[in-house]
Image 1 (cartoon, rainbow, N blue to C red):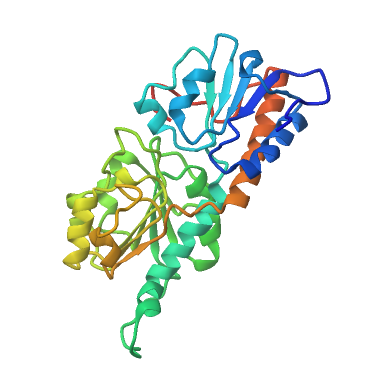
Image 2: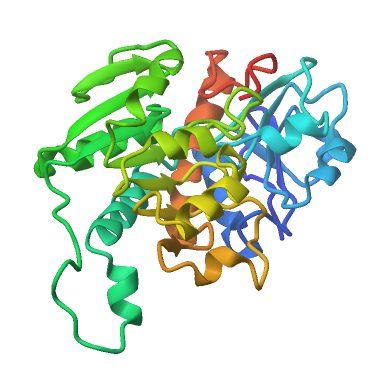
Length: 318
């Protein structure tokens, strides 16, 4: 792949590896985004001042970092795996893709909620005609959004036509545009009996690990659904399996699981109250286009010496 930019000005930026997070067919999309932002793409990472990291094997990342690299753009919104392995430090700036995929993930979350309310996963598996007690109305439901950042805010906009009561939970209890009510993470305990749907869109940190466990599931209404579009470890999987098997909640719609991928033979595969999608909230084409836009904007900011978007807070873990 010839990635050398025609122009000679602009910071030297390495894009790769070609065996990337998305598939090599999208590499040129990101190269063009760097060039539109005013950067100069180089083939040799030793010459780079910045790195657009696309690797699916993060263990390779340290081999490309040298003292001249001042900034690394990461491809995913979640950076917990890099943090856990000590691959992100304070010696240079790292930016995540936080906020890039908000619209597509929010759309998927809405689809999961609608499918759960109308029990489409059960209807699709049915082999006899049954009409009584099949589903419930979604409009007017109480939706609790746990982590109302980019994804949560986008979801709130999508929920407007349904007349839902939307309870937004953030770490700082900030006022989220469009939310009916706003709560801090410390106030979440009072919300478990309130929600018809709980959408998990929080970052994966030590503070959010297993934020929904046996106690939280027990406090929910018997028809409540848990929808996870964030990270699998935010739910205690064993507690969820037990709650579903005993019919203590209405269901769970999971685009992410713990473990992931969900192994063959896992009880969630055959649980009638579970709806599972294989981490598919971001279609590859939409994902690549969205990330390319962020790369272009951050490169332009890097060239201008301006603050970059979605700088990783090493202490906070995201």
